[in-house]
Image (cartoon, rainbow, N blue to C red; front, side, top):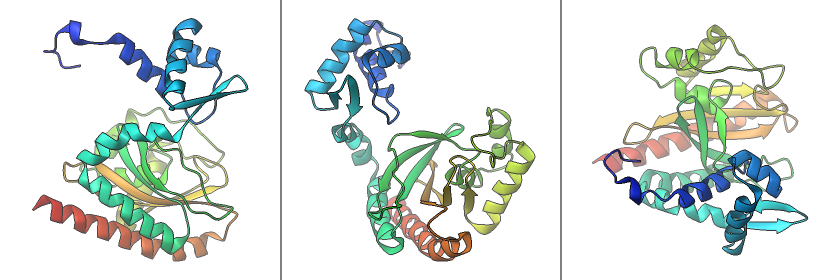
Length: 256
């Protein structure tokens, strides 16, 4: 909150309602699980969840609450205020149409990446992306791609402040190893990560900057079982590079 704002303008109930929404990470939750995550009495959590369910943001079935697509409407003001993000939607739609893979737009937020937009592919092995989910930057392709655009020793300092833990047996956690991969991404123009964050998933990512300097990346995650690594890279790299080029061109036009 702005330090100059009067405290009596702060609505704690609204803050707690947002906390209830943020408690969900993609899986249905019981009332007690929500109350525990938010740190409020179950009776209070019930009132917030009841209101959100009545408004259509959640459903309640078999004792569990599930987030609904209506929550995406809450992102509309942000998308409307960020023309490049709106442009990204059409670029991703075209990219998914070309490579038949789910594609995503992520932003760098501290030592994490935030899934902002996605276009889902329709085949059986298509990856399902949770919009609004935060992932660690150090062991994801989109994170490393964006870190490769940081000037000076920015990536080194960020890794030094990041809690790095293995998510799979393939996760790199030593700063020296990760920095080598970031430098490789800087040289190639893309980052490639296979099964470091999630077993069975590989991702190719390319990064760019929005007009105000926000680092972003386009990615195309896919199951490792779909095809050999070499075929995936050969099939996806060119279209992904063209998508970033198209997006960067739109950003340059918006700056004029």
